[in-house]
Each structure stands twice: as structure tokens, then as C-alpha cells.
Image 1 (tube, helix red, strand yellow):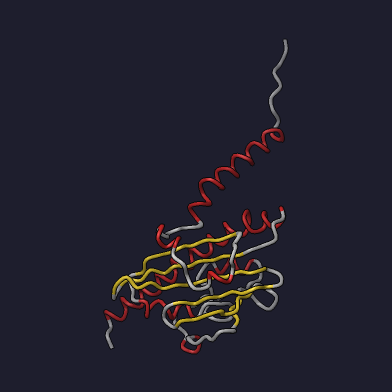
Image 2 (cartoon, one colour; image 1 turned 120 degrees about the horizontal axis):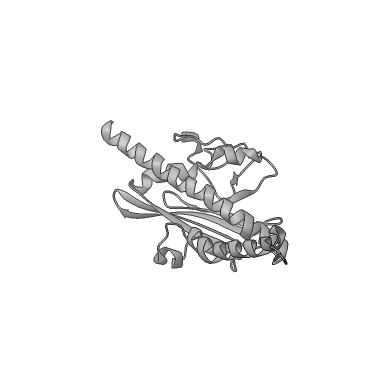
Length: 221
């Protein structure tokens, strides 16, 4: 009696990997690179777009916050390692030595930034963003042309909807040499991780700003 040969796990692995890759590329990636953002916000030019003329990786994400822009801005302007933190999963950041400690309060001495100041994502030697432009209470543009990273930008833009509601739009753009290794690093590894961390950042900023407004409403000065 002849026995049909069963395909080995090794033979099935490439098909499974290809299927997973297609599901991510066609389904998950188009969703997470524009998480929370409307079509209009995706198309909307933002300050800082000019830093990366032809991005190879990009994302525009947004969230509605039930607080005026003035209540959201203090949390944005103090971001960074050694500053207010990144309001994301500190324990994940610190697994790779970023030494991030996100705060739950506004730090008065960190409310001032100037063009050229450096916002770090970790200690010396880790990626860092210079402040490229700033409009108090409205927009923070981080980025520039880095010898290692290439041109890159990270923009925080506040769009007031009314006196008590603000849209926070965050846009990142970057370029890299078009090699297979860079494609894997930036599109396969960095993009999903950045989404996980940035989504948590947006949710935390929303939570902090709304809590501050609620506290102020219940305990007026």
C-alpha cells in the first residue's frame, strides 16, 4: 500500500510567511499608518513636510481630545528622554536601554523649547530629533537630515475644533537607502513598533489633558 507524502512544516513555512506578509501589507499596514486620521487630515499639508521631500516611510495618525489646545500643548512640549518621557510603554522602551520615565504631571521648567534644541529618544548615542520649528500652543516640528537616519521628521500639530475640543495630528516621514536590509528594518520591524508606541502616546496625552481639564472644572482656582 502506498502512503501519500505529507508536506513538511519546512515546506509549508514559506507559504505561511507569504500569506502573513500579504495580510499585513494589504490589511494591517494601511490601517495603522493612518490610525485615527481622516482622509482630509491625510492630505493636509503640515509644517515639517518639507524636511523629507520623498518619504519612503510615513504615517499620519490623529486623535480627538476633549480639551482645549492650551491644555494639550504642555504635554507635547515636554516630551523626550530626560524630560517628560514619551507617555508610551516605558518598560518596553527600557528593555532596549532607552531610560524613559514618563511623567503624569506638567513640569514647568520643561515648557520652553527653541529651534535647535535636541529631543532624545534615549541616552547619548540613541536616536534624537532636533527641534526644526515651533509655534507655541500649535505645532512642534522635530527632525532634520541625520547622517545615520537620513532625512526624518516627526510633527505634532494641534487643530482646535471648538473651545473644548482639539484634534492632535502626528505625522512622521523618513527616507532611507532602498536596500532589502533597510526595507526590513524600516517597514517590517520599525513601522509596527512605532505604531504600537505612538498609539499609546496619543491615548496617554488624551487621558492626561482631559483629566487636567476635569480636575480644573471640579476645583476652580
